Length: 160
Image (cartoon, rainbow, N blue to C red; front, side, top):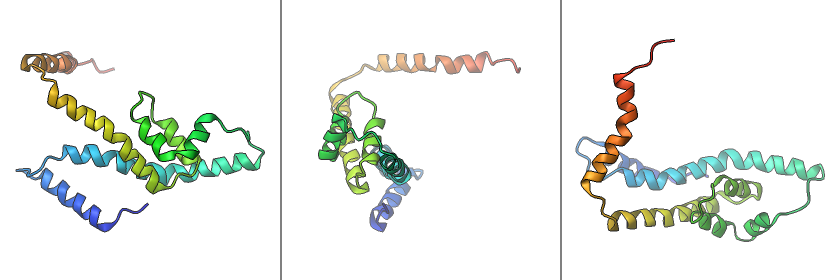
């Protein structure tokens, strides 16, 4: 899948404006949103042909011939299955493998990954807006997370 020139140019302009000395716009939202989409495109370009060839080779050798219920469900509703997987605590790689093995088109796969991320980002945004963490708790957490770094600075390992 080749990204059209206009969105690429817009993304470049946004990245440029968000990384200059006096940033006009934040860069984190673009990274959070476009990171999974660009990874989905790269995954599809790299792994779909590889897994497709493996599936064809298995089918030519007689294969298993048995479709499991996840594969049947995925073949029937590929976009919905990927999108709803974002609501589960399950890892995403089995859904990726199903997408590539069943020949899910790159456009549908990328759209499904975008739809998969939306509920998670909406939940995080809602939690960030409604849950107020006291400043002292944030400082304490920061210090607690920095303790391993302090150990590296104050007590470096002896060279072996």
